Image 1 (tube, rainbow, N blue to C red):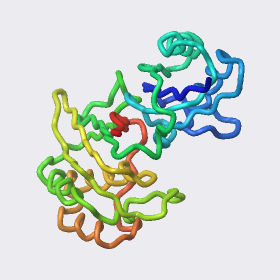
Image 2: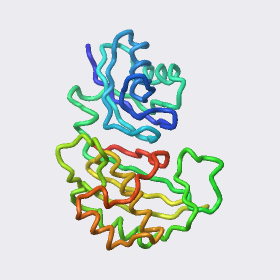
Image 3: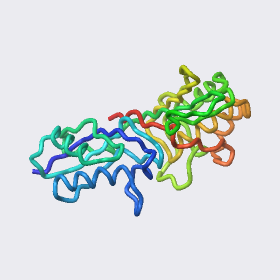
Length: 246
């Protein structure tokens, strides 16, 4: 009898060309499908909650797949984790309703973006933060975050080739907070995201933190629906998918 398995995956995206299977490159989806197909001795297709780009990490990516097997979810989880040699770990595996779809049933996602804001370069953990040597001012950054909360057209922060029918998204919350040792975390939750949307917002908010632009200019950028007016795209290494809500 075919069963629908839901899995939660943690991965370090540094060595991967993103989530989605692509020709001639290593991706997280490919790693999972290869392991599952080997274990179950049949072709398995894994559906993720959404794509993450090359170099982006996840602590809570969600996916599902269908398989005709008598293996218990916990045994399947252990088998996958023993077979995958790269930095991809199945944290949870369970049987769910046949109709569950990891992508279409998702109602929200949360991302965190990590910045190291100190004069000295990063030696340890450099693949997980964006190092900015000049001091960032949090007050204007927080003002910008307050502006994007709610339902808006985010076309100004859309990357080229974004697969969408609309550029309108609802942001449930957005904020920046300072951590110890120069750490800054940008947190955002929304019902969905355009391609590069988080990284483009971060890059633009950072311009306000560097006092190269103002919150008033950020408001104008948001309203303009023109990507050319927004700031640079923040590097992928600081971005983490933290949660998918159903």
